[in-house]
Length: 459
Image 1 (cartoon, one colour):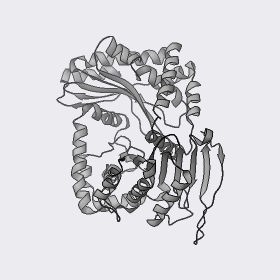
Image 2 (tube, rainbow, N blue to C red; image 1 turned 90 degrees about the vertical axis):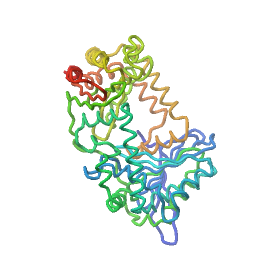
Image 3 (cartoon, one colour; image 1 turned 45 degrees about the vertical axis):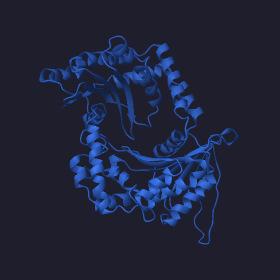
Image 4 (cartoon, rainbow, N blue to C red; image 1 turned 90 degrees about the horizontal axis):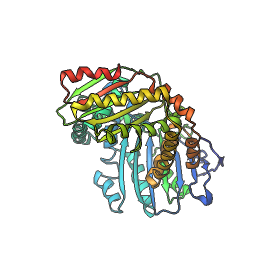
């Protein structure tokens, strides 16, 4: 990732505030696709991507905090806080927040992950100032009242129950625990019933003050937007809230992680009265900064990324053993996961697992033929471009890039990196990743004999 050119701009006031630094990170043709970044005094970063051909804009604020930043007693605090920032500020009630965006036909939401949190609104370009004011107000002026904490606790407990009622979703949380154990990355983002019930308003407020100062925040905006106007509006909103009090503060650097304990050959089974058995077979993957991630992306696409993938063809098309079967990767600052998911009838789970394990072993030992690699590269290039066809996706890309890598990469550069993957690159990463002993997570009505045989899949 490279920064193509940079300029410095200063915006002074009667208080002679510090200089705001602006850079052009990606120079688009005729201004289309231009990505610019301004670092405000106080460490707040504002990144925009201009797309004049659309009539919408998506505005988001990314917080450099996720569930991996929680202690065991605080598990679920990041997600709890995400909910509470919608409950009211010093200027707006919860109804005011939602009604203001609804009134202009916009969309507003948020999501919490293991290493970051994002709050965003998608509106018509003419309504962008409103979206900026509302989202900035939420991030800087949240009240986090005890009565709101108590009310929202019920909603979060229902969300946990809803997830547990969906074994196809729950099995991925189980797999993270199987691989990473009782560590911050191995615990569920939502927390547990016990940890959520134990969280108090005071503890959540302390967590909020620690992780939501401007140095931990990144503003990302994409669509029919003017960078300088966005910067002025964001700066005004944060200054109005008194949130830029330390002009010399530096932005926090991208997360470099820490030593993570990873296991192999482990089996975890959660008995449930379901119609299907849901399984994830997988092993340690790659950190998101690993240069081999491009080759792993091609490998993942060829193995289980579409209807022509090996796993889909072998498990579903040829044998009809599962409706849903796919592979996926998760990359964190210091580690990653590679998994294969399948949902099937309980009496067929061992056959499905054997086919999946045989395919992984074969590719680890012999690699993939060139034609499958070429097809996967084409599929990955196409899906990458098609996945960036709306302003929300563009906002996600520039916000996450700034937070996770501290740099931006143009779409053309991404396509070049994918196209540069060679068959040897794919075969080497297949050997390194798939050659490891797998672990297994399973949810379903598996009887004792069936459960004991699950260990055969990781032997």
